[in-house]
Amino acid sequence: MMCENQQKPGATACDRDESIFQALLNAIVEHQLLPGSKLPEEALAEAFGVSRTGIRKVLQRLAAVQMITLSPGRGAQVATPDVAESRDIFATRTMLECASLPTILAHLQPPHLAALDAIIVQEQQAHVRNEGAAAIRLSAAFHIQLQAISGNQVLTGMVTRLTQRSSLVIAAWGSPWQHGCRCDHHEQLVDLLRQGALPELTQTLTHHFDHIVSSLHFERSGETLPDFNRLFADSKGTAV
Image (cartoon, rainbow, N blue to C red; front, side, top):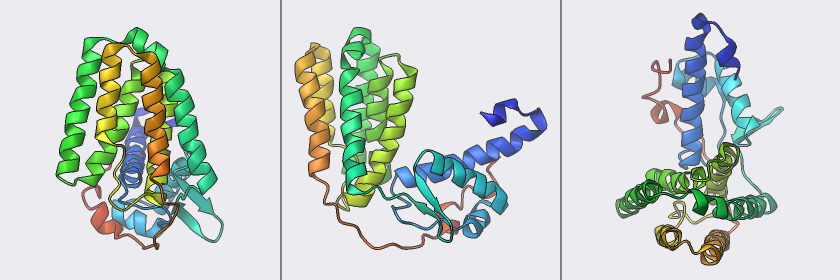
């Protein structure tokens, strides 16, 4: 990364940019900024207490990972995956995550299962409390933690990005109450991991993704401009 090559005086600016990047990324992934939401540089600069130049760099990073779109004359908007892209995202996840299951089983240890169980418990609690943002975050964390067991950092990074784009798909085409994956599917996956049942594990994970796609309505709600000052009030002046 460019920040790693800078001398110490530039580290503060890099840390600030990273903090803003993560704040915006989390807001998009957790459905606080919905697909189609406009991201005006001036409003974001005011919300974070930084220059428009700094915001522009962050927006370019978000565009590079396909979380937003940058269009001449229209500016930045949270990305809205179309139907074909939405299906492709989950088809790609199915291929990658199912293909890694043999390696995951080969590396699986009791602490891995305990970590997955802990995520499921937190995910269930988030659903009971109707904490949508937490439920989405934990749903993604389950799949990332599962993939990390394989030891393949490159593939884990790819799955991480795909889970973020999956959240965009669910925000664009899912029901208003839909927050990530179903907890009971995750429980089934962990049970099959314990049994080492590869065929059933592959089938269940495939069904898991098929179920998500089948639940999407491919309908969109209207667009609104978020209150950036309220949304990022805690980040202003603290992004260092």
